[in-house]
Image 1 (spheres, rainbow, N blue to C red):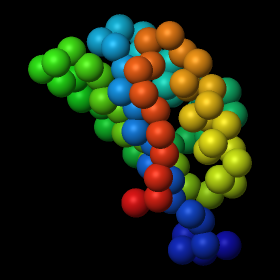
Image 2 (cartoon, helix red, strand yellow):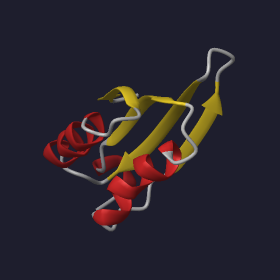
Image 3 (cartoon, one colour):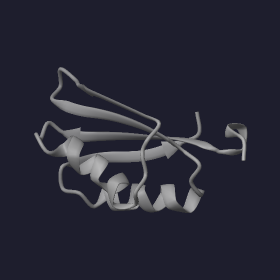
Length: 84
């Protein structure tokens, strides 16, 4: 399967500036034995942690499940995915 056959998904997460927020986001991927293609995290001046996670080669249902699980985490303010 070529890389062009693997859909790329980008998850965008906004979280409280909690020291464990980034670990909680990445934990969802670890639990499914998924290594993201890219992870970018930045703490905004407003005190919100913005995390972007790019993953490929997953069914859309799995990405939707990850987003649903992340939205249940208390320190997560908002999470969604899209195709870049």
